[in-house]
Length: 90
Image 1: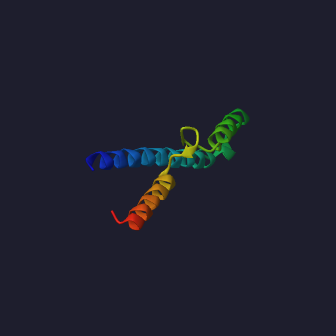
Image 2 (image 1 turned 120 degrees about the vertical axis):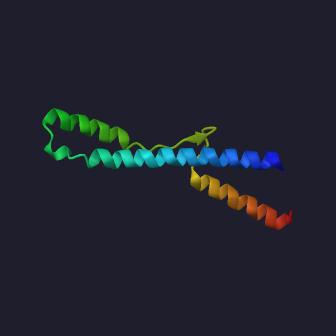
Image 3 (image 1 turned 90 degrees about the horizontal axis):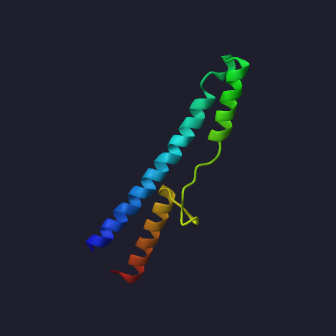
C-alpha cells in the first residue's frame, strides 16, 4: 500500500508541475501582448511580434508521446480509480 501511495503522489506532482508550466506559458503570452507594444518603434514591434508568435504555440507535455500530462489527466485517472474501487469494493 505505501508503494501505491508513493506512485500516486509522484504522478500528482508530475501532473501539477506540468500544469503549472502550461499556466505560466499562457501568462507569458498575455504579458507579451499587454506590454504596450503599440508605443514601440518598428524594430521593437517586430521583436515583440516574433515573441508573441512563439508564445502562442501551445505547450503540451506528453507521457510516452501519447498521453498529455496535466491536472485534467490526473483527475481522469483518479475518477477511473474510484470507479474501479467502487465496482470491486476493495
